[in-house]
Each structure stands twice: as structure tokens, then as C-alpha cells.
Length: 248
Image (cartoon, rainbow, N blue to C red):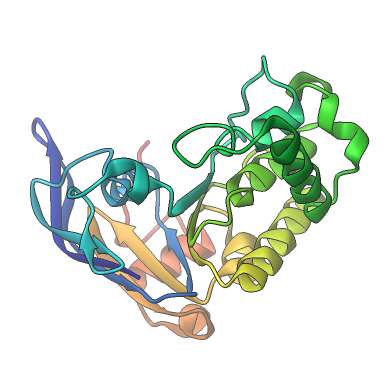
């Protein structure tokens, strides 16, 4: 579904991506891990076409990301943003239905509200939540609303950017289970960026580790704890000493 071949991206003298290669199969859940500033978010932006690589090639469904109708291309994606990123001036249901009421394939307000309430139910929120505003909800509830919005238009591909940031361990577990259930249920292709190793074990079919703008390791989730890769082992065990230099 997503093919990334020898992708490079720099900002002035900062070489963020330095020859990234990655393949994500249709219906697969890939999790990208790595420290801050290793290029994870920039790679995601390149896949979405929000940034253009300096060199290399990215295709989604066999088509290059920087060609063709942008609206049609982006309609294939759903996104759960870090910290939910809800519109505070819109009610919960309007947040969930935001895409449904816009663009060439927009639907009526009543139909959009019905779909929004159904998606809220899918993430464990009752219908009475739909008319509240984001500020009236807890962090965990906001994250669920963000997840409902991500799946509202039944996308083929869903991106999850640090889905458990700011949540306690119990709510993190709930969100991880919901993500896994929904991805499997929809048959969607999923790409997750996270530092949370509990999310990795809950969500991933495959894992890729980025460091210094390069793939240091990629493999099946079952191979994660016995990889023999010094970068990966230092990261997942949180060791101060190793090939990854800690910024002091």
C-alpha cells in the first residue's frame, strides 16, 4: 500500500531523512519508533505530500504522492493527531463529522450527525456526548473523539501520531485496544508513530526504528525483543549507554 524508496529530506543544513526505505502492505499495522528529532514526523508529512522529499520516491497504492488530485489522494487517509487536535469551537459531533460535511462528496448535516454518533459509539462514547464541546471532556475522551473523527469517512489508511500522549496507563491501554480492534475491523492500513512501547506491542504487526534519518531496524513484532540490534535494544530498554547518544 505504501512504498518508500531511498527518501532524503533536509532543512538547510539539517539532514532529517537520509535514505529511508520502507514497505507497508495493505491491511498491515506498521509502528515507527525512535527518539525525538529522528525524522518520524517528517516522514509522515512526506507520505501525505505535506513535504516534498529532496530525492527518492513515495507511492501510495502504486501512485506517487505528489501527482494527481490532492483531494482524492487525501480522502484515502484518516488521522489521529497527537493531543487529539480537536476544534474547540465545534461540538463533538461536528468535530467527528468535519470531513463528511465538506468537499465534493459532502453529505447532509443530519446524515453526518448520525454517522458521527455511530462512530462515537464505536469508540465507547454515549450519544449525549455529541453536543458537548471538547473543553468539557477529559483527555481520554478527547482522544476517543479524535479516533472517531479519524475513522468517520471509512479511510483505507489511518495514521496515528503518538496516540497515547498525555494519558494515564489505564486509558493508554484502552486507546491501544480500540485502535487495534478498529484497524482489524476496517481492514485498514495503519501507520503509527510512538515512543510508548506498550502501544508498540498492542498495535504493531511490524516495527521500524528510525535513528539519524535512517532505518536502523525493521521486522515483525515477534522479533522485537530478540533483535540483537544495539540501537533497538538501547531504545526499548531505555539504557543511557549505547550507540544512541543521549542529549545532556
